[in-house]
Length: 71
Image 1: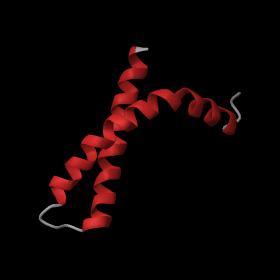
Image 2: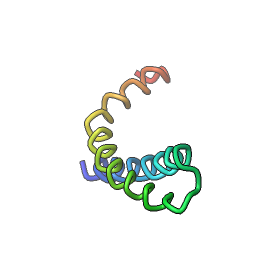
Image 3: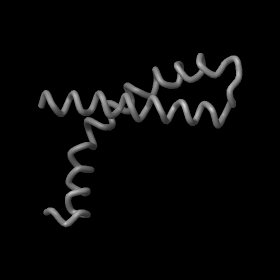
Image 4: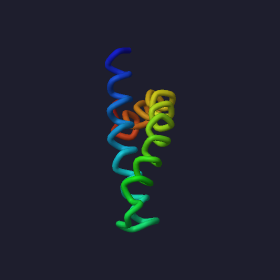
């Protein structure tokens, strides 16, 4: 369980960090407000991504095993 929590926290951190950077850039471009808006979006996205990853992670892992022909 400890490894699952660490994995969920780190994976959701990395994904939400880069996805919010990208989407903020798409919406605003590199303006004076970019970093402020990005950090605002990231601070809201990371907790949501963490909860979603923790809840759906085991199911998605099962799907990936099936798709890879491992189960």
